[in-house]
Amino acid sequence: LTEIYGVPLKKTQLIHHGVPDINYKHGVRSKRILNLENKKVLLTFGLLSRNKGIETVIKALPRVIEKHPDLIYIVMGKTHPAVQKISGEEYRNYLIRLVEQLGIEKYVHFYDKFVSEKDLIQHLSATDIYITPYLNKRQSTSGTLSYAIGAGNAVISTPYWHAEEMLAEERGYLFDFNNDQQLSSILLNLLGNPKQLVKVSLRAYAYGRRTIWPVIGGVHLKLFKPSIKNGNLYGRGTTD
Image (tube, rainbow, N blue to C red):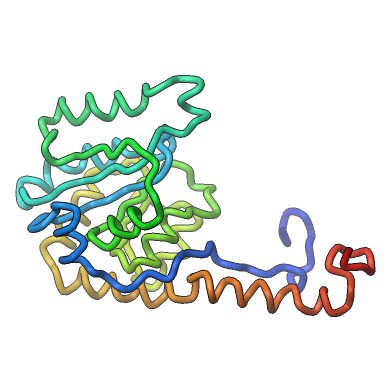
């Protein structure tokens, strides 16, 4: 806004993507409810499309499974409606074939449905590591990343704009776009170091507290109140 469109900095306000107020990690209970007991759970959720880069995670898994055969990777979400209209389930089918080619069918689960917020929070609470392997550097926001941090997940992500900001100061890990070897190395390091996994998770959760809906609502109110008071919320000298 400031560099390209010349908007004065004092007229801008950064407000985080809001998330529900999620209690920190009921991992054991959530895993039991979801039949994921004794599993190391990796999760990616959201509408499927080519720019999600899920294949990078799948290619990284065989090296990780060798040392952690109790691992499961859940890919949760329907195919994006716009993508489905043009190319149907081509991307999902490609991912399924890739899983079969690598012989890791029992380690990857495609949850092909829209989920309720309750179901989503249950899965986030059961997750050990959340992954956003997106392919577009110029992504200014990711709701799924925000939810994962709000739930206190340890997060590994490609370095798109929002992830670079949210995972700074050791709140998570970044790996290069399409770099499955780098991803597998980070996964092996984290899964082999439970104390570090918890440490990163706690840092993420602490930062995520500033993004819960009550806090975000307060930020909006603080921003709008002067304009409402002055009667020019829409710049017309009236609140009509």
